[in-house]
Length: 88
Image (tube, rainbow, N blue to C red; front, side, top):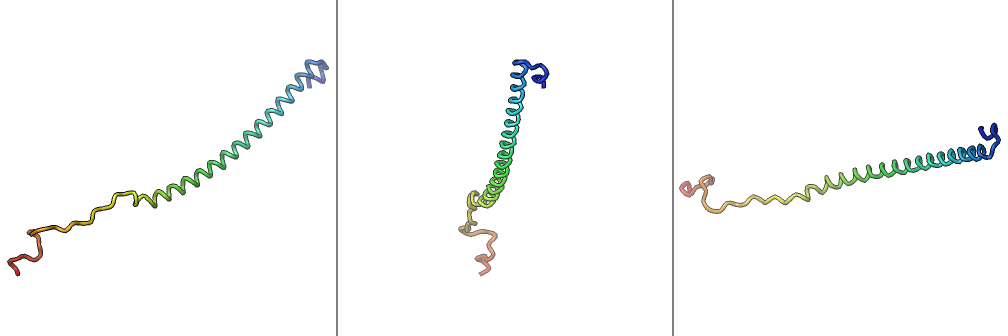
C-alpha cells in the first residue's frame, strides 16, 4: 500500500519484500503442518508398537524365570514317616 502512495523505487522494493516475506511465512506454516501431521502418524505407530511389545513381554515373561526345582525325595528314616518299623 505504501508503494502506491509514495511511488518510489524504495517503497516498491519494500512492498515486494513484504509480499515475499508473507509467501515465505505461508510456506513455513504449511511445512509445519506437514511435519506435525507426520509426527502424529509416527506417534500413533509407536504407541501401537509399544502395546504389541508389552503383550509379547507379558507372554514370554514366565519363560524368562528360572525353572523351579522339583521336590526331592528324602532319603533315610524319618520320624514323621507314616509307617514305622515297629508297627509292622
